[in-house]
Image 1: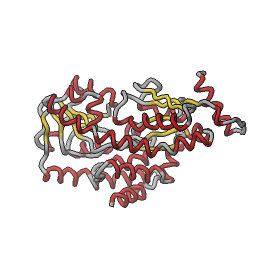
Image 2: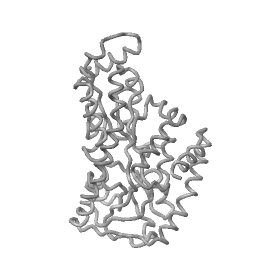
Image 3: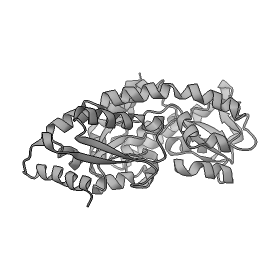
Image 4: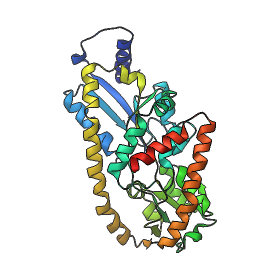
Amino acid sequence: MTAGRKLAVLGTAAVLGFTFASETIALEWNVSLWGKRRAFTEHVEKLAELVSEKTDGEFTLNLAYGESLSKSRENLDGISIGAFEMAQFCASYHADKNPTLTVLELPFLGVPDLETQVELDRALYAHPAVEKDLARWNAKLIMSSPMPQYNFVGKGEAPTKVSDFEGMRVRALGGIGSAMETIGAVPTTVTASETFQAIDSGTVRAASFAPHAHLAFKTVEAGSWWTTNLNPGTVNCPIVVNADAYAALPDNYREAFDSSIEGAIDHYLATYAKVYDKWYPTLEEMNIEQITFPKDQLDAFKAKAGQPLWDAWVAEMEAKGIPGQELLDMVQSKLN
């Protein structure tokens, strides 16, 4: 057992009735991430910085990239058994484990910007059904990783019509995958870290990501075209903590942690705004063809992949005893 792990256990012991001088205890939490540092993880970086500052370096978050603690698809499992104290995951990596979160991955919800996405996520994460859902994994949701609409980078002949996606194998998760199925594409689930190789080898023709991920996972280096306005949806990738580890935090550490979340999100939003400063020049530099689809084709796509998929999602959730209609109504009311 590492020193950090021993201290985490000591923290848990506090819940069982042991007492100690919280101001003198050094505590380290391990945080499971994947890939490398990028816009998608900047809020976690900022949270670690702020927490350390507020506790004079006594409470630290050890950010572990590259799946060094766990595979990205297994982060929620790791949280559930206390293998680490904090992690990032994407709901669509395992929709069956977190079905309530997938309401925010439905296609064509019409979220206008990242600031709205943050507020939407915050409201959903506080819903009792969602808290109950994540409690099955001993997980407490603390903040979102808001992302803009996904679009596709692909290799080979570029689609010039929405119908050109018919028969195309694409990396598309969650609601985006369901939406792409309605126009004849063949969605497949590939993790972010595997996507460059999947495009390069021809396993998939195209992959959907937000711009930061196309940059971070180098799909633009494998692709030859990019869709500017398909906008089928996005994925929801929250940050969670192990509920027991959080409950065991001394009061001063918990206050430092909680009070740093807002600043971490603000930093994320500011960082993400700069992504586009690099994105478009990169497309030009890499000679990536930019494909813009006509409005009438996009309207037809939305009609086929919007409300019908929402209705199907609600029916599936209600059959599982989950208040799907209530969750979708809440999302829509927040957007309206």
